[in-house]
Image 1 (cartoon, one colour):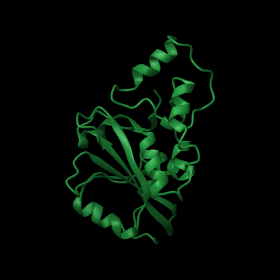
Image 2 (tube, one colour):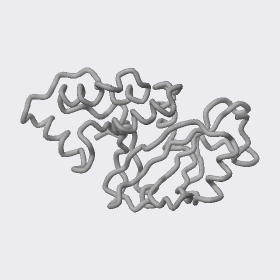
Image 3 (cartoon, helix red, strand yellow):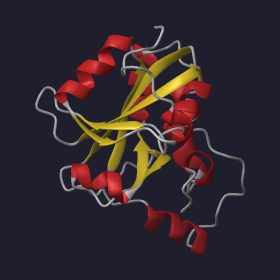
Length: 200
């Protein structure tokens, strides 16, 4: 399994791919579920068996790995870490609530989760959500985005449950009610005067 979930994971059969995308083919979120072109593995082949072994038992067949959560962060939600999955149900919900998002938005935000600010959600009684808060844009014209990842009750599965842009003032509320698990670093580490100092 690769750390690059978007390009690294594969569907185990053409039938699974067709079922997963039948209703969501035009959605930007569903493009993350699109199968890369590769020969279909023969039934019973070692490749097919390896893929089945990589997918936890509770993860839906049509779910697609979109990112990877490192163990040091996953401990905050009592998980050992590992693949972050996006289900077709989440893709459908995203298309309904955020139809303006492009596939490039998903890729940019998910591609920044190794460097962005991470907060354990503290609102509404949530205890198993990590919020990845990503800055996009240039230094003086950037916007906050949120990708929320939820751990299953036993921590064995991790799911992307939402991804969308935020208003600047929301960052202070998230940080005030939650607990910071990791401060931004690398390209995401450019820090304004306060968390909400964006232009949007």
